[in-house]
Structures are given as C-alpha cells and as structure tokens.
Image 1 (cartoon, helix red, strand yellow):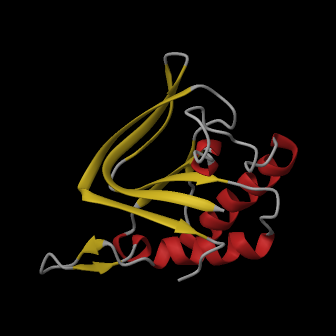
Image 2 (cartoon, helix red, strand yellow; image 1 turned 180 degrees about the horizontal axis):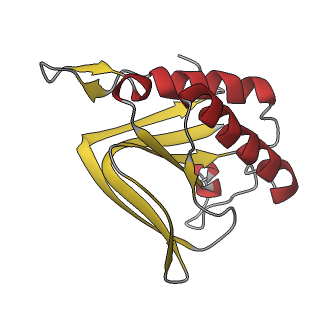
Length: 150
C-alpha cells in the first residue's frame, strides 16, 4: 500500500456535483493498493498514520499526532499512485490492484482507521470520478509505502 498524506485545514470530495465527504483540520489520505498488499499492511499503515507527529504543538513544533489533535481523516482511493512511468509517456497502471482485490482492502483500511482513531472516517467513492478539494496546511505532504518501511 502506498499513501500520500496531506495535512489539511479542510478537504472535500465531490462526485457528479454532490459533495459526498468533507473534513476540517486533519489528514487527506490518498490510498493506492497493489495485488500483494495484505491485512498486516493495513494494521501497520493505520498505526503509522494516526501516530505520525505532523501537527503543531503549543510551540508550533510538529510534535502532535492526528490522534492527539483529535483531527479528522478523509481517505480517497487512488490507483494512479502505482503508475509506472519508465517507458514512454503514457503511465502504466498494471501494478495497481483490480477492484476485486482493492475494494475489500480499501474498506478494511477505512474500518481499521476508524477503530484506531475512535471516530468515523470520511471517504470518497471507490472507482468514481471524484473532484477533490483541499487546503494544504503547511504545506505538509508525506508519502508512505508499506513495501519500504524506513
């Protein structure tokens, strides 16, 4: 699993002109899934995200986690995170998991995040043409790949 996490003041997802999800202070999480991702990746990634100290403390130092600031989370599926761009100019998405693999893992990731965070998680709609709006705070953008746990 690969995520691009953005610390946001606000974020929302609109599908066909209807806003389906929105958050205030928190994290917008773009999630890409490959075929060999597994439940152990979900557990590790959820724990890493909610405990990542990227929110300012009383001194303005990034020293607090999403859990500590009681922030919101919005998870959006994004298969394009696994684009291969080595050859030519058209990205290949062959590494991205097909919906029959990706949807159950996506749903499990959202449920695990809700359990770990102790509150509902907002989501986009898997496979939909989504318009994502965000106000990046910082800006703070972090990429995490469960295949490279450094």
